[in-house]
Length: 241
Image 1: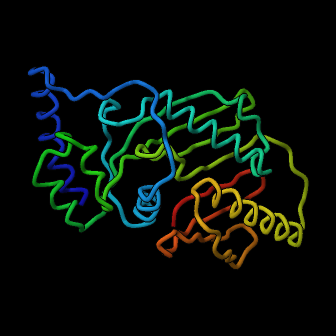
Image 2 (image 1 turned 135 degrees about the horizontal axis):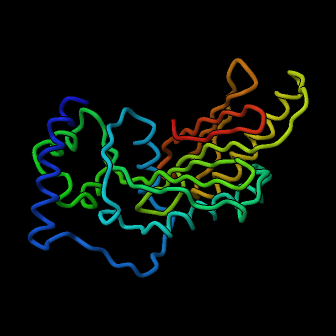
Image 3 (image 1 turned 90 degrees about the horizontal axis):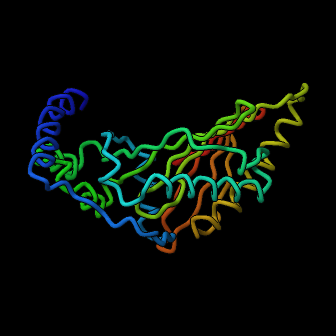
């Protein structure tokens, strides 16, 4: 796959150059976009939990604008804080970077189509199937050195993963306390994410050690969506599995 993408990059560069010279670069409406939970977010979550290849995209090829991505990230962090899952101050974090990526499933029909045509001719239309999606990588940080990395679904404006590290002192914690913290964290995540994605809560399963868990959700079509959780001190991550 890496070789195939490497061979494709010159073609992509030439295509972008040709479009710029001919004045045919696609542009999208910059007015505020109303984002909402939909069938598509469940498709994106399932896609991100599989074996995917990625390709960097120019920001102009995404539906969202960079400021909208930061707004979606801050809204998500505020929701985490209200749910007791985030100990930092969402308003104290400043944007660092945001860039869109095209995710597509390895070995899929979309993968084959991707290599047979110019993927940047109309990348947004490629995401109409369940085998590809445009997702933003976004990073925020504050003055204390704490940082948050999120991915935001371009189609819905919903966060699909988060990794957070908060700079704070922590004393020794027993194994029993770690298990209690993990159970509380996992249960709170299940409640918060079910509301955020508008999905029915499913099950919570724990790993062999008190630092990881898997929460599931049920779609209206009775399909299962899984999210992995890790929690180590003041650091935690949530992502599609």
